[in-house]
Image 1 (tube, rainbow, N blue to C red):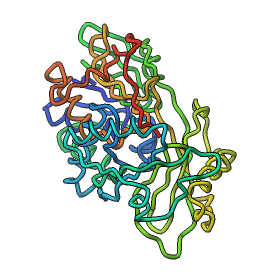
Image 2: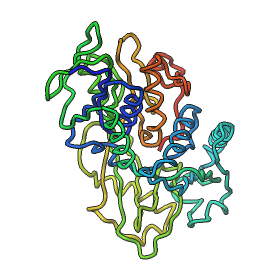
Image 3: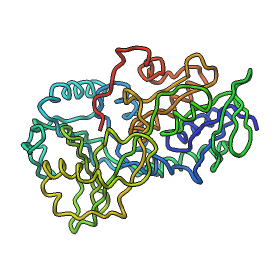
Image 4: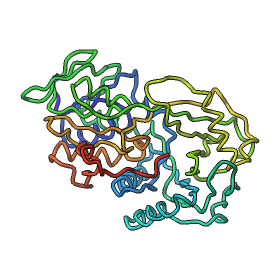
Length: 377
C-alpha cells in the first residue's frame, strides 16, 4: 500500500498528528504494535495538563493544547489547577518562570505559605526536605481524559480516510527515491514520509531505520489509595524539593515520585519504590498517613526521556522524509493537540509556522548550550 505519511504510534501524539494530516487531505496510515490504541503511555498517564514551564515553547505548546481540550467534550477537561510548592533554592528561578508565563498570556498566581494552604495543610519545615518558601498556582491547569482525546482524534482521522493498523509492528524502514519502504509485521508499506510518534519506543523505531534518536524509556509508578470517606477536590500538587506529587482521582488519591535510576524497558510495579516515595510525602503531608493503599488500583507506565527533557519535533536533519514527534518526557498528553497542528504544517508546508519549534528540533543536540526545561517532575 502507498501512503503520504505513515505515523508510527497510536498514542495521543500519533493520533493528533494523524487527524491533522488527514485534515490536510493526505493519505495516512497509523501503525500500532499493541492490540488497540492508547495502551502505552497515553492510557497510563496521570492525565495532568499544565502551563507552568520555564521555556516559552513548552508553555505555549501546553497552553494552546489546553485551549483546544477546553472545546473537546471527549477531553473531559477539569481545571482543578496545579499547585507547586517551591523551596528557597528554586524560588528566584521559579518566579522568573512565572514572569515568562504571564508575559505569554498564561494565568498563574504566586501565593504565600498561608494562601497555599487553602485546600490542605502541609509542613513548610519538614525533616530531610528543603523548607518551602512559597507556591505558585495555575488555575487553568488541570486534568483530562487522555484515552478519550486519543480515540476522538483517531475517529476523526478515520472519518477523513486514515487507516489505523493495530497489532502491526514497525520492523524496519529503507529510504527510496520516493520516500520510504516500511516493513511491518503485517507486510510492506510505501510512504513519502515516516512520522515517528512511537513514545517510549521512538528510539528503537529510529534504530530500526538506521537513525540515532536519543530517547530512552523510563518507568514511572502511580500509587493509588483506597476510597476516601469524604473526598475533596484540590489541585494537583507538586513538592519541588522532593518531586513528590499527588492529586484526587474520583474518591481516591493518586501519588508518585520519579525514580531517576529506573531506566529501560523494565515492566511491572516496583513496590520497593513505595517507601522512598512515602518517606518524603509523609514528611511534607503527614495527613496522608490516614489513607490506605490499594495495590490493585496502582499502576505503572513509561516516560520517553530525552537528554534535556524536551521533545524532539520536526524533520530529521539530513534524512529526507523522516519527521519526529517524540521524546516528551512526561508531557505528551498536555502538548499533543498543538503538536498535531504543528506536524501537519511541518509536513505540508515544509516547516511548522504557528509556533517556532526551533528550540525543540533535533539539531539542538549539537549545541552544548541548548536549554533544559527546569520544571520537570
